[in-house]
Image (tube, rainbow, N blue to C red; front, side, top):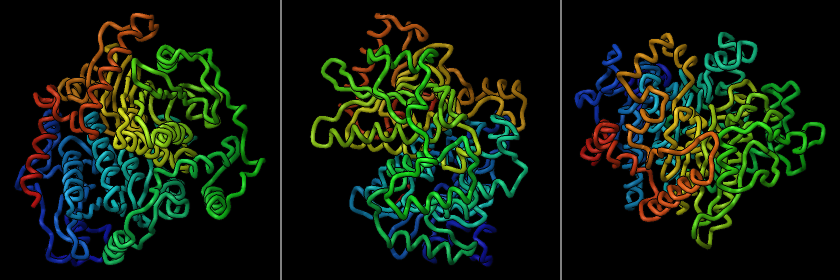
Length: 568
């Protein structure tokens, strides 16, 4: 392969991977002639591609073994489905195996993705969770380097993935954000974010702003040689003591300095970040708002709060700076447990997170509660951590994107993954909605997932209205497609067919838990904790369950087996 263009953005996905590797070392795994295409697109009248839009290349970088994964944005907007997600996760898992066995293998991901491929929905969510898990595990051995060149950038769940990387390189044309402009406009209105305003978009989530605000490490010119050198330099710097997604107190301090009731723009964020980086002084009083002013109204209870109270016996846990995140410790039999739930707070400082969404402060607060447990149990028995899940989505808003909600969600996902790797049994109990980035950050990094078998329990990548707009379908057409691809459905029974659930629990009153209901859940939690303690601390159980092996994740399993065969 010969590269004649110097613009990295103008190269296709295969050429980008070739450019990053040492000359003459490019070897593609599961290329087009292997015909590993998505089995879920043709039933919907969509023409698949034989590599599913993902290029996996083995070679060397500065003479050391490497794997470079490149997402081809021209196919389905770089969306992550079952096959494409399995190629990324599987390649990172093999790189992890190499590093664990003493063979240093350098991992690089070239982002060009809108996030979950909505035509495969929950397959995308599961795949992105598995990619995140592999990234966190890999970072213990070797830097994990990402490049966001443009023009698509990195959005949706893949922006959470990007937030976990050791080093992020971006061009001025690149973009990084959890919620795309069209989705914010759909969910919050054009007054909140005008998706046609390109200047607004780039001033909020463009490469220059993301670099100035500290959400990426290197701002590179759109030149192949410069980006290749930046990748090499990232590996030369070696392992970082504290990746961005683990810097909980740093980001909580930054957010505390913001008064959401006042105008706040890109230049304000740059100035605030520069001040926070240059001084350890307390935040100015005129900027911050007190925790007491945000105390939640407890009269309205969602399922998350009901089940938190039922399992902990605590109606009003210790007040925190972020009352929408509840945490309490308790015991189940001989097990110590930390419970965490996200609940509505009608007085939330950030209005877009008042309905129980995972917002800026929620993600980092989850991370703090989890990391506190890791630190407290460092020299002793690791307590179990139970994530009680009932959240409608992440928060959609201009300030959320500007202030890095993708990084907040990454902080929560990182903390749960770190706890799991440290030996804490992490259990998710889905009692209501588990939607999109909220589920990726609060629940999907768990060792085991339990869910109530109830009509009010739903799992999905995006609301129906936004999914219809992004895929250019009507809601009726979207619902018709779920009959062909269960991963697109919202109900928990369809999600269970994918093999990720440890158990679907029948016969429990989800809205009004009584003593017998609580006992059922306590027994199920104890069983899941015991099962976790006797198993591995990764997410491989989601690929070995009966449902996964009998149809739910066959493509995911097949991709990994074929990658393994071609790896060396």
